[in-house]
Length: 99
Image (cartoon, rainbow, N blue to C red):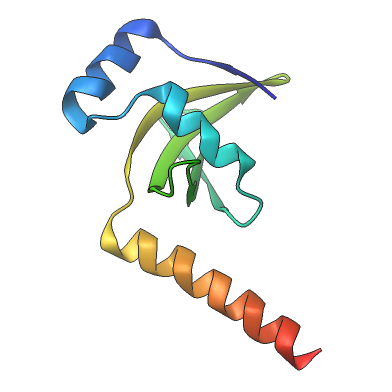
């Protein structure tokens, strides 16, 4: 998977959230992440909540540009987002146990 971002936005995100887009991109390796579509400022965006390689649960907003993922913003997930992520994993485990 190929990623891109605006370098000045990445620097701004590092200052504001202490999080680089490089680290944020690792949530795309999390097969159990959650996604929800949105339209922001007239552009189709996707909100993804998932776990990084360092086990942080993040919320990342991105847009698909052909075959490239363009990261728009990233931050640590809010409590409600973390709970939704953890709850979905528990639901998956319950479904597997019932099979």
